Image: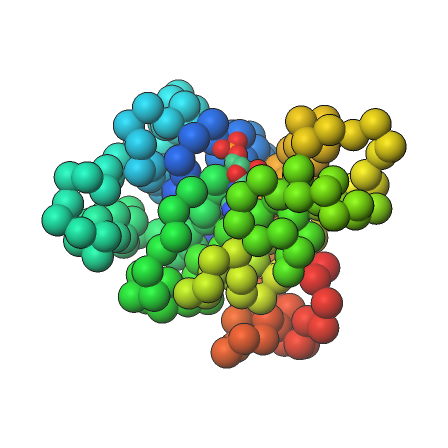
Length: 217
Ligand code: GAR
C-alpha cells in the first residue's frame, strides 16, 4: 500500500493565542476535522472570560489562561505564557485576536514560527479600529492579512491577504461582518500552507516552495 508524503507526515502542532470571541479559532477547529495536516495542541488566553476558551474546551483542546496582573511584570507574564505554549509542543503559534503587544524577547524566540491575523490590508491600518479607519480613509477596498510576527505591532512580512470591496452604505459593523468569514478562510489557508511545509521565513523574506514571495498571496 502506498501512502502520500503528506499523509505520512506528522501534523503540524498549532497553538492559538486569543483574547476574546475566538471565531478564528473556531474556523481552525472546524477545518482540522477534515484536514490532518495540522493539529491544535492548545488554546491560550490572557483573559479567563474569553469566550474562545469554551470553543477550545468543547473541541477537547487543552486550554490555559495567563493573566498579566498575576505576574510581577510584562516579561514575567510572557515568560509564563510562552513556557506553557512551548510545553504544549507547538510548532506554530497563531495569534488569533490576541490583543496584546508582545515583547521582543517572546517574538524573537518564535520568529518564523508565529503568525498573526489582522483585519486590514497591511501595511494600512495597523492597530485598532481598522474597519472604521478604512471607511474614514475612503478606501475602496478593505481586507485582512496574515503575517509573520516581528517586534513591531501588526508589522512583519505578509504571507496572505484577502480583499473585499467597501460598499457605499458600509458601516464599520457591516464591513467587519462581511470580512470575518473571509478572515476565517484566510487563516485556515495560511495554516494549511505552513503545515504542508511550503513556507519559510528567511530574515524578512518569506519563501514559498523555495521561491521569494514578492507580494502577499
Ligand atoms: C479578528 O477580526 C482579528 O483579525 C482581530 O481580532 C478579531 C478576533 O476575532 N485581530 C486584531 O485586531 C489583531 N490586531 P475572533 O476572536 O473572533 O477570532
